[in-house]
Image (cartoon, rainbow, N blue to C red; front, side):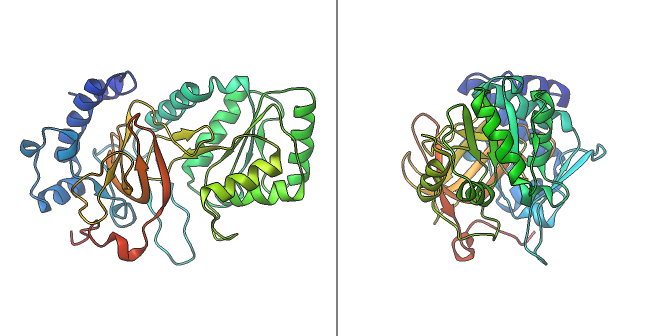
Length: 329
């Protein structure tokens, strides 16, 4: 299947059978055109001849995005998304040759979960992301803010007084509002000002970014629910290395769009998979990553359930990822 045809099919996936066909076709394409991924597969002695099902596909350790240029074509790079990192640490780089794939992925996913952006006033509190270059989250939220079209939609870097004024005014007139923010900034905000929000969806994107003590999800959400006066805290799960996102509407369980799937690998044997409800390493298939790598072994720990929802329960430490990296390429 040609690349253009593959892209056209991608966002029309509705069934498991269609996903399987698209995933196997993507694997064959990326094995042929992504030299880093091909070398990794060959190291594992896996070629397209050996791959008949999703469970046969090798997943590239996410750390490769820090050390290699992960691309599956020779087109010009139109955007480079970079991860946040501590001073002196290596950051991941996701080289994007077709930004329209990212745009269609996040726009379609947002509409599947929340409806059109134009039905919201979108307020963004993402200071750690705004203070650096190359954030894919900022790219997405900026576009959703534009598509919102509401005059009060926008980013609030450190001007939390203005954010509080906007949020209070919107709440008073019953405007449907989305407040999306990094965890530490949302915590700081709702500790400074108390709210009782009836018309606002509060969505955290995870991460204390070294600003505050890391909290487990239940602790974080309990504090945010109290501070904002809401029954549920929504969550967005995405990363620099992906062009798709999963969303949770408040129970800690994330759901994916049809072109994205999560598998849970055994922490002792990265090439076998856990049964539903058992914890392990998160592997992600993101078919929107047509031009980089769609099969990624992350450093997140989680569980998957029978309805294909999943939860994140933590991250590997360096000793836990010993069997997953195979970095000698």
